Length: 194
Ligand SMILES: [Fe+2]
Ligand SMILES: [Fe+2]
Figure 1: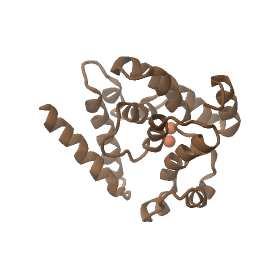
Figure 2: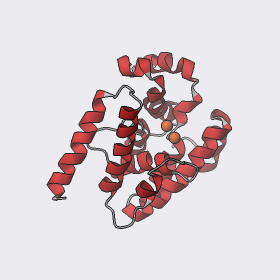
Figure 3: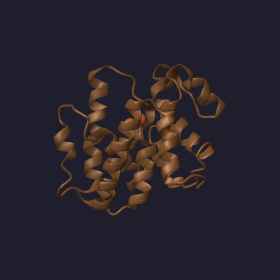
Figure 4: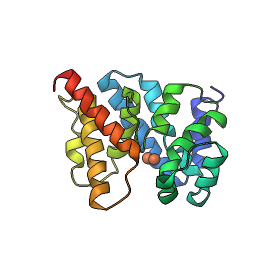
């Protein structure tokens, strides 16, 4: 890694708007706590949580051209909702600008909006931590935040279902990959006998 933890914090504080920086700190802490609970490397979870919104350092108006520059596919869904691109763009930028070379961390950053079939535990933790960090408020949040007695895939299913229902209710476009992620969750449940 090119920078120390302290240097990364400084770089991030300058790179992101204050609102996203403080959100990133909360996601870092939440991801770390979840990693402890679910048996994942806490340092990796903290760093992935801290950097998950690195792509938000690119203005929304510039994100499509930045994605194209980085050879990230931009389909009709991303054209309509460029916000989605901050995840894969951020994943590329933490590698090229910060020298992060751990593919587990890069993937977790890249997968925190739409997800990916066969998500790792770290991927799921960052996705969930982003959604339930302490400053979030939405109806149904407490149910997702209550990790007690649940497997990580169950918490992820609750979080993912919430997002999917939200998109349907608001008549938003749904990324085709969302269905692959949904089907993957169900197959894991069937395999695990739940
Ligand atoms: Fe994000
Ligand atoms: Fe976020």
